[in-house]
Image (cartoon, rainbow, N blue to C red; front, top):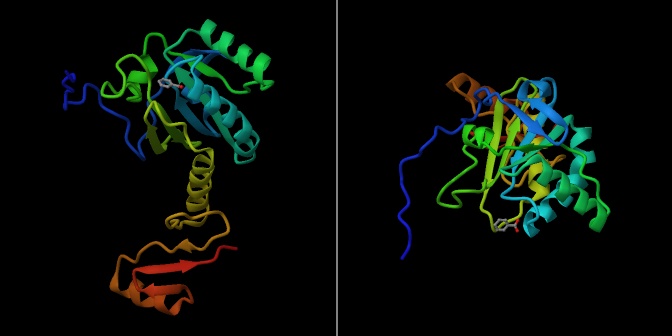
Length: 219
Ligand code: BEZ
């Protein structure tokens, strides 16, 4: 018989474009606070459990993109509801068996404090493990993007890098990015909010399908 799932959320989840919930946590690199990441971008991500196959492939993949993230001023911080000893044993095992040293800290969230604060435990998926959540936090501590994957699906690192590139491009040039955008592609000029702006933009030399959909090349 299938278990009944409550439709009432038990916690309030963080929201986009609001300050990311602050925390202090024990990690594999010592005690870390969210505020330690002021002035850099941060990807805070959760995985269901140490010593599990999909999570192991994700840790290898996060480590592979780590140099690209650092070029973009982005730090990584992992989390699961495991002890710091489990994290140490797992990352040592990854290094021993797969030759890959995990370069970023991992929160040992045994009391589920950070997981609860960020809505990483979603009982429909698992009552005891965190889902595969990704929170992108900007240098001012504002939550800019969230992605949630189920336990069965490993995350796509290209999409995570693409999302960072899109957010940083939007911030730098005050533009939006279209579906499937990649760095170098045309960007979207923000929609006009007055009739005058709508008329002006048609004369501005953008590539417009109509007044509400205009693209331009950056640079
Ligand atoms: C995994 O990482 O392989 C995994 C973790 C929890 C549930 C299912 C798969």
